Length: 270
Image (cartoon, rainbow, N blue to C red; front, side, top):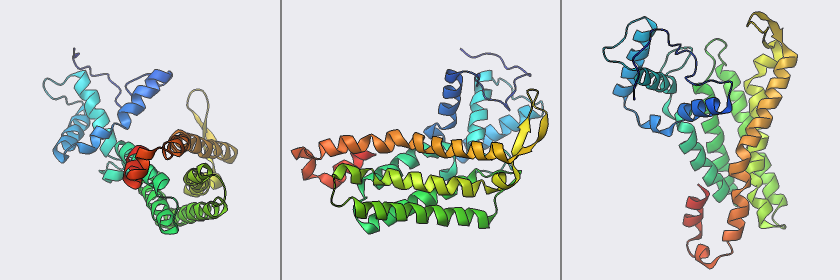
């Protein structure tokens, strides 16, 4: 059942209470909804018009609150919050699930040969660079030089880690070898994130009081925040990259999987 539109809805904030776990879960499930990737330009422009009009106090006839919130999340999924520009398709949050599950699955399937390691680590870091560029800050944008340095450094670190560990794990359990892609991704995050946020490390991040009054900038807070981001990125990758190797190591021993090994394992990994 839909509700009539109100003129006091704050569409700058998420629809659900961000002070609760369920509120945050609903918000981020909506933000990363892969179905938004399939939206047409007409649908995106219509959402853009609804939100732009509402911000100016103009409401489309018959617009409901549910339709307004749906337009807000469509708008947020495709247009940059600072610049208002339409974002690159694969750099949008709605593309994260299909893109990451495909790339991660391929990294974990094709990890035994040098060309495969180089190719898929390069593809992964290229995708990360596109996401970082697409979602760059409009207030303090990263320069092309900073993006390029982070991209090259992260790619080099990931490839070097993967190749080095592959060489070390050739004579031990295959299970350990399956965890090499995860180690490479972890190493890349340790390089990429501090480089991408080096401006904050140098100049600090804003500090506010309980009333949101800006008190200044702190480099100590920046170091703590970036350290937490690095750890959380690695932990977020761990279920998808640390659990499947154990499953695949068991399934590989089954006769049915050995027949169509490469094709079927790729689908199972993804």
